[in-house]
Length: 165
Picture (cartoon, rainbow, N blue to C red):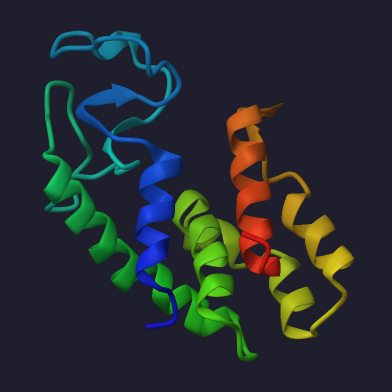
């Protein structure tokens, strides 16, 4: 394991928890079966999960328990995030640095992050300033717009990566 148990806590805090499926673009709406035409984003529940336990897309009306959500996030980190980190990081990092990177992999997915210049900067052990600039570059937008909550998440990840958390 490259990441630590702190990654799960960090993800739980940043993602929040909602037991009932919601539209991530309109999380304030209380959607029920039959309201599918109102969905504008991605159906999500738990701590940012977008698929059910069997890998099928979520449907309105589905729910998840807090414990199942934690278990599924840990399983996702083990199966999806850890292999990405193993593949893309070629230097020794601390557990906290892997946690910070793991948070980005969790939010964006392996296919999105695999081509990022950030990995090269880290592997070349470039300056903290260059890594920080790359870390923040374009990664705090939602639907093309800067988003405060995502900005705060990026800053928290960067502080964790730099050892200032």
